Image (cartoon, rainbow over all chains, first blue to last red):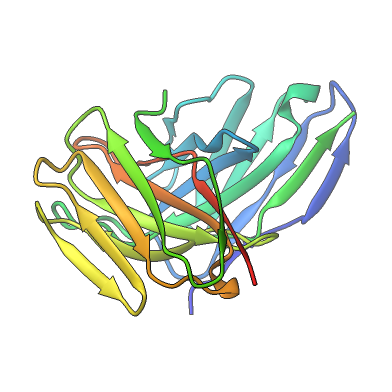
Length: 116
Length: 111
């Protein structure tokens, strides 16, 4: 069974701190994603990566960066945390699609980040 | 920005009643996926629809993909308390690698 592990379930940081959110998957998936989930806004894509050292901006990349040095690990970095980045962060991974059909996303349990 | 609209945002039903959530895209989708998120949990994949007009069933759940591949629906017959959660649709853009999620429909079922 696919396992996507996020390093922290809850995290509290201060405004201006540099924050690292780590995600590791154990199924050799090429594609990895970072979403944030906020009430009433659903899941919004921050960044994704389809290969080691490759990254693509999602819908809301401002204030974030990512790192994919190894296939199994995808890190989300908040360069200088702000209160409006308080949210639930979800990591996901999947295999590449085949034509119109995609492999399903496998999500981690999420990291609830509070920035004070 | 988000291009997949989902309604309603909330639905409260009595156990045994039916429930439907609708998903609409401004552009043609190559496929659509549905996920369920239980309270306190993470989204879990339910199903994927690829073909125009496709209908798939999973027990009491019926999923449809529109003829134009721009809309989809999830219908639950005779809801149970175990159906409680938020249901998300997610459309694959024709180009690129990422799914675009709807905002979700939160279903509450009271016994």
